[in-house]
Image 1: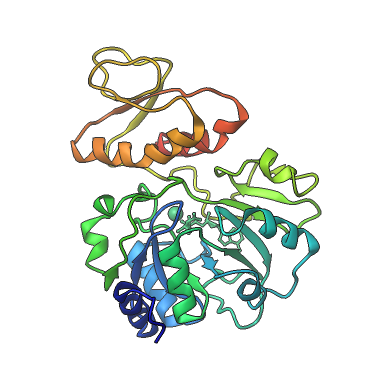
Image 2: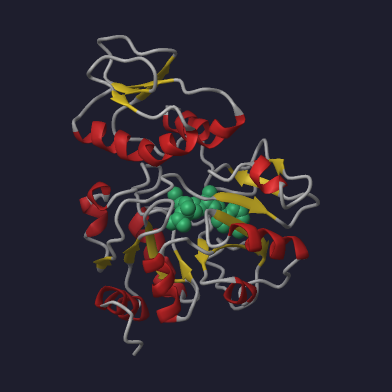
Length: 303
Ligand code: TXA
Ligand code: MG
């Protein structure tokens, strides 16, 4: 037993070893974790979330060496990207190794890997010394939780433990980058933009229709119970989220894409808890840095 590993991490690691589900903190959103190489444990994730079996999971690793153990190819570009962005909100899609069960990758021949930038989760992966599968800790199509208080109580009844790591620093899910096609292709927008990745990888593209390759990219996703309506500017009688304008009923978020993203899901969860319906959202700016925010807002408002 490593003396400097906390009791919470030791308990979480024991529960994972027993095939149980554990809620884990990451820098992006909270995850619903199970051992990635244990197909029974992974099937519990799908069942608990009501997740369609055709939607593959991200496999979390403690670093490059563990990542290499779940893939069959590790191109130079992967080295360069992880050197620059790991641990961090970048998920790489690569050809999967045979040891990764089909259920984890939804039967596909690729696997998504990411090294999370959160000390507790990293300590947990190191403690179990195995890759950990973790989708966001929400029911399928609902808001991803970025704070422990936003975890769905019904979902929690299916989990053995919550590893509390405080509020998530990034607030929206990782950028998913496919490295198995001719050009590195973004399958899911995140805080790391095509421009950020281009500093390291040449010719990064954004997939216009990622649904084929990334079945998690449903048109409807990230939805609160209430309806989301995007408006140019908030009227005084509209309760929701604003940046520049808005009545005192509006939650005012910062006019900066990173700071906004950190607060977005938490603010929606709060308004949802208050029963606000519809939740009006003032359209944020349209510059490239806001692409991931727009992606989440579009899909959250798509009914
Ligand atoms: O930030 C994150 O990525 C969070 C934290 C918990 O790490 N995880 C997360 O997982 O958002 P999830 O399952 O909610 O979303 C994973 C996305 C889905 O859109 C899924 O379809 C896609 O990644 N994905 C997973 N494996 C893939 C693969 N082999 N090929 C293409 N897309 C994949
Ligand atoms: Mg998710």
